[in-house]
Amino acid sequence: MTKLLSKAFEKASELSDDSQDLLAKRLLEEIEDELKWNRSFDDSKAVLNSLAAKAIEQSKEHKTRKIGFDQPSHQQQ
Image 1 (cartoon, rainbow, N blue to C red):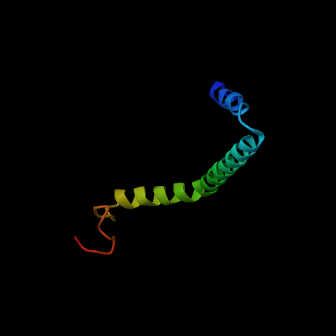
Image 2 (cartoon, rainbow, N blue to C red):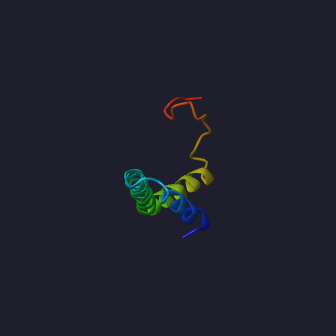
Image 3 (cartoon, helix red, strand yellow):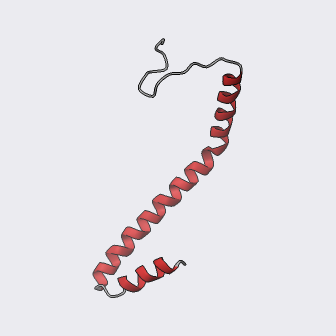
């Protein structure tokens, strides 16, 4: 555990029991959300790597065209 987290828990121990429970509930929900995001990104790494490799290959073969972020990909320049 980091020093900052330890300090936060120490400070939280000064709160009422109800406030501690509310804080704990929020923290546990936040941790679960963070773990879900981590799992989601881990699960999609192989797909993203494959798509990136394909995009790089297409770019090397001049099969891509430059467009702006606000321009739909199906529009001609």
